[in-house]
Length: 451
Ligand code: BGC
Image 1 (cartoon, helix red, strand yellow):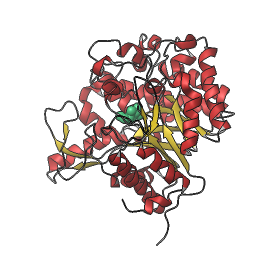
Image 2 (cartoon, rainbow, N blue to C red; image 1 turned 135 degrees about the horizontal axis):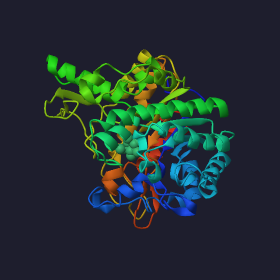
Image 3 (spheres, protein in one colour; image 1 turned 90 degrees about the horizontal axis):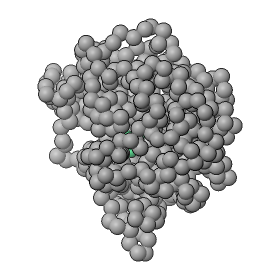
Image 4 (tube, helix red, strand yellow; image 1 turned 120 degrees about the vertical axis):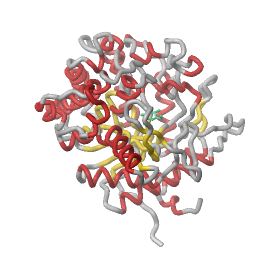
């Protein structure tokens, strides 16, 4: 039997995002972000949890990089907090904030870990939200100006840049259903936010071509949407769900148009956009980053506003602590689908992981998390299947390096391969971290061992 091996240059990473791990949100001259405000609005975040301390990564950065080194990571995907760089969102650059990311990048490089920087992981400067945030057409310029500051400062050391993390979640959570900052609930705002996010992405890519020498891409979250039955209503519902989540952002970037289902879903709220916008949005990118968590079995649900779809639980499946179906084959399916629909562009799995209940870290320093180990084994096998079928997959990042603030669920859901005790901030490697370290050390060979 052949031994499982990944390409020699394959990047083995773990991911985090600024607001979820850093803490010290206003340190060294930073401005407040929309999340700083959101967590301060009673009732919006579970247990009133905030990112004021989070994992205290802002102060423990060097130790955290040593932890990454111990795991054998060859890449670390992090995000940059816009409001640390530009406290007002635009205008004066804050040297204190820039300094943190410079030190982070330098420390990573010292330890042979490739930095993968994301420019926007949901923490818009509050000052820009006051001007309409993602609804204001000027946001594309604000974002490109911020991106340019970062490209100028760090492109000599950062070779992989992502513009946005999951524009679908920014819009769906932030502007349509309101569970995430800035917490709006509007069928009319959501299409505008989507379009301005894409314009901002396009402008940042343009700026990169002028200032950068390496690679820039977009990170989206994708999930197979399978029809729960072959009834025409359910088949149509699965098609709408797929357009809404999987094609809404990638079709404009690669095919120059929105899926036609968008008008079916949003009706009069879906505007006709100027043709020239699609030229900007379609600026060629160097890679696609894919965040994969689940598969959804979809049925038609008339009352589910506005997409009219519902997810049908699968009795034979395992579910994570966030209620997501574990479906490793869907990851192979998604990677193949991206290649088939959008071409043979380099891909990265920029996030993949699961929240499961973890026992408290034992005194001996062991956290046993068998469900998460099984999750990683199966999903890593699934990406290897995609590589064997010719997908140009360049790397993989576990979500997350460590337990962190799971947005409006607070600290109640743990996604880390490293356990964080939120009272003492002590880090303990879970069994899944040891397992992942073995996968990395063997470049995939341990995936052949039976479960
Ligand atoms: C996001 C992360 C989040 C994770 C788990 C992704 O959608 O990029 O910030 O913590 O999923 O919900």
